[in-house]
Image 1 (cartoon, helix red, strand yellow):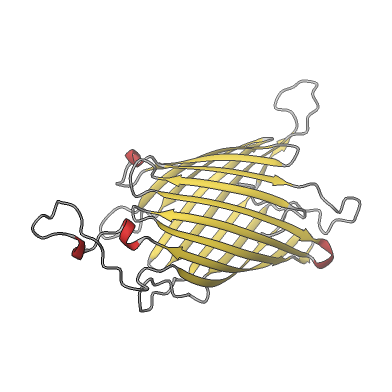
Image 2 (cartoon, helix red, strand yellow):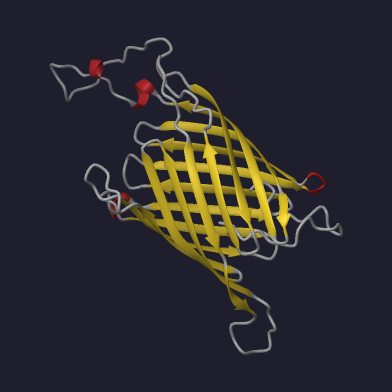
Length: 306
């Protein structure tokens, strides 16, 4: 998707999952991408930091992105893409974790004993990951597939092998036009767009699977969304595989600024007392540097901006 807007774009995302419990997940990401029309290519950079659980496992990644746009026919395009990522994972072994040798058998609920700092144990791990994917799209539909961590780098903090499993993703959607123009019979003559876009996103990594199904409803400039996340037909260890119902609202302004907010209402056994999840997104599509030049395509990529 790098360069998909056929111009420059910059954006930020912040997500806080389960803020009411100690084992929360917080994620921040920022990105920039642009398009090179002379080469039919998109370039981008993506930075993300993720802090997981009560042990505060922190992952920082810096990724370089490249895509190439192929025209396969009238109103039919294909975009292969590639990603190379540097990932640094770190955890405070003796700051955030408790080991058996730190518990005094004579006073198990008392103060912890000092940890035995073994040289090299728990040092940050540096990984290099390669990923690839592709998306086929028309004016109103898209279908895509991606594979992350193709080389399955070793992420172990101790001696041994713990490969980061490949993450496979399948995504598709279809935009259904609901007409345009004013919602009222007045004299504003506004040619506002309206459409409904059902979407699906399936991911698998190692033994874990996740399915998101839902839709966007766009009434220019406001967009609403609702999804269900879970695999109820595939229980895990006898437990219902439900996760959340997701609700979203956003606005696309004429100056290229896009703002969105989503909330995950937790429906798993963890319950809404976990605080659900809050996510804020902000992006800005920059003015084109190639105004006046023939456009590479007239089709606007139907994928939502959020």
